[in-house]
Image (cartoon, rainbow, N blue to C red; front, top):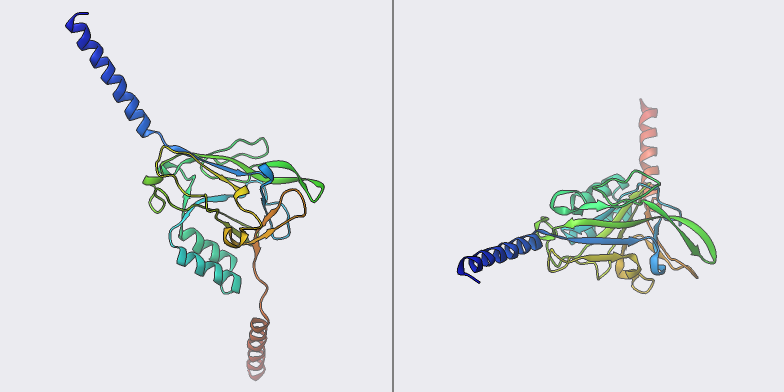
Length: 250
């Protein structure tokens, strides 16, 4: 083999290696979300075990300040903050995957609804068995891809991820210990709701409740807006009496 041919082959080899290297490092992984009751995992429901509407958004990403998150949850549960103010506070403290750009694009298919390509939605139904009774539940299944965690400000590599939903004045926030971004943008991550169980619900269900059904799939129930406390009702009544007295004096 002559020297010129060897030189050409070397150049071709280096070019192929460079293309392969650059292609590999520009690819990103996918976040696969399994929220359809697979492997008898729990499904997200309303506070009374009903369906979330098809098209309800499931937020997937990271809360950047856990102190703010804990305060927001406490204020909601105490009735200090309304549903709308609570969702605003959660959104302001959250970095979403599935909003385009470096954050990734939602990849779902559904014959039931028009799927938003940038948001992860409750998008399909599943035939499940709950306490021996067959039920058709609205669920979510799909992925967010491609995701570049390191480029998403507030997320990064090896960071905790959360799933939360807000629907009809109810909110649920969930976090399994295995839901963390990989150490590399090239790696995939599966966020399966079966990582949330009755045994670990005290730490995995941050807002909402875990319904441990006798058989079949369990429920991850959203938390409803709390009823006003007795003290709050007495305060409202006292304010009303003062207002009535003032009106009588006019």
